[in-house]
Amino acid sequence: MPAADAKFIELEKVRLTFGHRSVFDSLSCRLQKGGVHLLLGGSGTGKSTMLRMIGGLQRPDSGEVRVAGESLTSKNERELGEVRKGIGMLFQNGALLDSMTVLENVGLPLREHTKQSMEWIRSRVSSVLESVGLDDVESLLPRELSGGMLRRVAFARAIVMEPEILLCDEPFSGLDPLNVTRIEELLMQLNRDLGLTVVVTSHHMASSLRMADQMILLRDGGCIAGEPEDLADHADDDVKEFLGEDGRAFLARLHEIRDQGHA
Amino acid sequence: MTATIRQLGAMSSQLLERLGRVGNFGGALIGCMLRPPTRFGFFIRALYDTGVLSIALIGLSGFTVGMVLGLQLYTTLTRFGAEEGLGAVVGLSLVRELGPVLTGLLVTGRAGSAITAEIGAMRATEQLDGLRMMAINPIHFVAMPRALALTLAMPLLNGIFITLAIAGAYVIGVSLQGLDGGVYLSGLENAVRFTDDVDQSLMKSLIFGMLLGLIATYKGHSCVPDAAGVARATTSTVVTASVCILLSDYVITALWSV
Image (tube, rainbow over all chains, first blue to last red; front, side):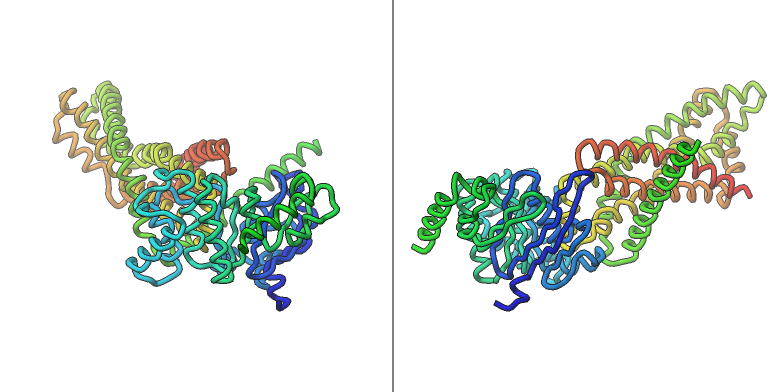
């Protein structure tokens, strides 16, 4: 793999504090292009904040955040807008515009950044909604949707522009098992077919383990990163404790899940 | 003594910093007004929310204020045998001062606070961040149409307020107190000059609209993103905009008289 792809998203010596609370002391990690990267960590360790930094929504106090070789920390809002055209983000609460219908919400980035006709946009929106398992919801307002439907509409909006990078903050929370599988398969398909780089925070371990190429455990203002198998064998007690009762059980479960996937 | 001076210095620097932020936001807002797309649909929707939905309140308030003015002024003027001057006094006080100021304060409470609350709620629920992630400038998409709508709605609502207030004073002065209708209207017509009084009234309401548009959208955009933060921002909009309207009213009146 070329070196540029190996550090497609790069955080270097990132330091961030909110008031007196330090979130990151010296966070450094690299995320390769086309991979599925899983962010793990307890509450308040900065998983969502890390996603926001990769999207340029949160500037670090010091250090560098680079996406596709471009430093986000030195860019102004307009320049960040250009970078963000290649990034889709699924927010934890959906972040849909509540005064607009599902069609208007999902079609908004297409209307803003393409010159396609309304007819084309409508058909594209319907097809993306269908891929997340939603039919006949185009005319509904976000408040008329259930929690699970709302998350899937938000997911549809995040992928409608076919971005290079997809940032997902808890994509499986509030979904029934059928839709967890559907979203997981869709993510895998986008990753496989379009080479989409996915960064995901999730507490849904089974789906996460099936998908992840790299796991990044955030703790103590820094991180421990590696392939799932590496992390399972990690000597650090905190890592073992977070991942399961012990590393061996985790590894056994991982092999089992991966074998099921290959079968 | 040193501590007091230090505290004053810190407060002044905080105030300057805040003014700088508001200035930056105002600059961005004007920049957005000059940049396509026009957001005409959102502007019309905002004009409906701030303007059309305020008509009932403005109309009722205007009519009531006019009735009270008519009653108070007729009683007072009668003492001096000058009740024929009712139309002139009502017209001048409404057109020059009461119309624009009261309309400004009412629209602040009715529409300005609603805009801050709406934008604040959008910030608290990450809708503004969602727009930024879609490479859409939230100031262009959310704040600009609303600020522009407030700016344009204010003079129109001022006109409605003044018209209904004049009608209210007419009902009391002419229909109830027995003043001649022709005397009331001719006094009004002779006293109020279009090029001076009406221009001043329109200018004031336009400036009040711009101030309210800036304050309401800025407070929403910069609020602490939680329920308490939105509530504080809404209150702050009403207080800040009301004070700004009253202060700028004095400044405009003083400058106009020079």
